[in-house]
Length: 113
Length: 114
Image 1 (spheres, chains in turn orange, red):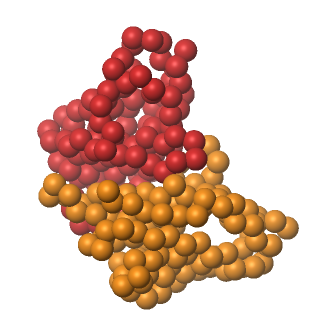
Image 2 (tube, one colour; image 1 turned 90 degrees about the horizontal axis):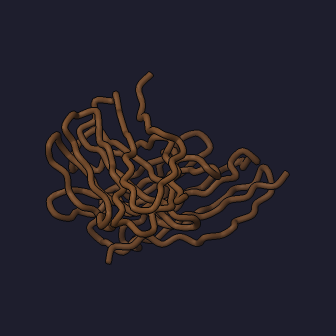
């Protein structure tokens, strides 16, 4: 069974701090990794994707990938109350001739003023 | 404006009734997907389609059916065989099949039982 694991949280951080969200995946063949943000009652919104080992930065967000450890993380610098949401990690796996996405259950982030 | 449109936003199903959820995209994406999300859980794949007139079962296809007659449209029917249909249904699309491209989501449909 292919799995993506996340700590459900809530992860509580003060405004202005760095929030660190972590994710592990079971399929060593996974090639692509995605972070989605989902506000309560809304649909997921893509915020980062990463394909190669190392770091990828986009504004206040940094995605980190370590394929040897099967570990993906998302750092949010200068956290704002508007960052409070559930963050979903997703990884591709190849099955039946197609790449499919497996989602983790999400980590709830709460940024308090 | 390019995007994925799901309708209706809210839907109520009577026992024994089939209901159809609409998903339309104007992003010219080849691949389309249907997911179900239950409270506190991740997204589970119901069906996906990589090209017109072809679709594959996902992890929880029982009680659901789909069609892909046009590239832009991928409707999902929740049949009376689905005994626990109450959930948030999300349609997604991606640019290229089998390439690990990001999936983008519509606003979702909330389905409840009357």
